[in-house]
Image (cartoon, rainbow over all chains, first blue to last red):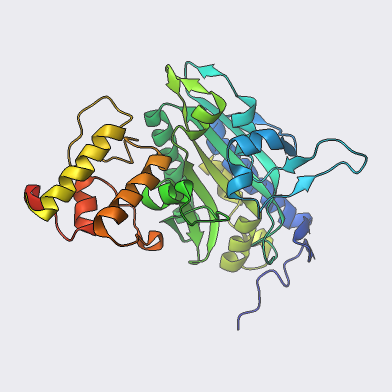
Amino acid sequence: VIADVTTHLPGLAWLPDGQSSLSGALLAARRSLDRLFARWGQNLGAAEHALPPCLAREAMAKCGYLESFPHLATLATPLAGGASALLSPAACYHFYVQLRDSHFDAPALRTACATCFRREERYEPLRRQWAFSMREIVCIGTADEVREFLAAMRARVSEWCTAIDLPIDWRHATDPFFSTERNPRYLAQRLTPLKHEAVFDGTLALGSANFHQDFFGETFGIGRAGAPAYSACIAFGLERWLYAFAARFGSTIERWPLDGAAQWS
Amino acid sequence: MSAAAEVRATIRRWLAAHSRLDVPLRDDTPILELRVIDSLKLLELVLLVEELTGKPVSVEQLVPRSFRDVDAICATFFGGAGENARDR
């Protein structure tokens, strides 16, 4: 039995309810990773955003989130009364909601890092948390623009992982729907290569590349070139990258290959 | 017409009737990639295949190419491609 790599990882405080608190070199490493991924987006023209923590229930019902993923959702509810809202399950939803009824004359790119919340049956430090940090880069455009964006981002991730000797495999994946039985969206993900995950060590998805076709364009009235916009996002689960780095490069964080990250930006 | 050819013709007619695109469809037109049908219609197509085979489709055993185009559907669920089978 191999001891979990997080047991003696300096700077990690684990809360068994599924949250972690980071400090020191580990926190610096998360920031370095986040800056690197953000720059990959900024280099393609993505504007950096600071997002609010909550999404309106109405919007998340409209795009089918509450129906497809009720088991993952966490609500923020004012005890004094008033409407509850959904704590972000992913950063990118904010962009589709905020861009409702917009039309673009050029591809629109956005990036943000958000604290995201997903309920799970069990939690593991850095690998599977109720609250975690997600850096996302989103592209809204024509089908071709969005495909080109995803291909470029996936290539960037692969090149960097090869350069630092962190082995990952891109794998076709599906989202964890509450019910997969006769669920059209699950079926579409099974049959169309819409979602790919960058998997470390055969088990841990460090990130995902998601092609939404024109689903959000149609749902929220976002247009590009006179038609419902296509969209895609690439998402990085930052704590999972820390786990992978600890597993691959050891618990001496100063030795992690992050110094050279600037040349990859 | 052979049974396989009838199946192929039925699937072609169904797709032509439900296509979102204003272009003629071929048996190798990638129906999901080109969004010929959306995900709700895809579910209906699965039901049509179940009706034609008389057997439930096991979604967990489907792979991305299972419903790529008419040729793939015929090959996956009807054990052959019918009278218009082509070598690739």
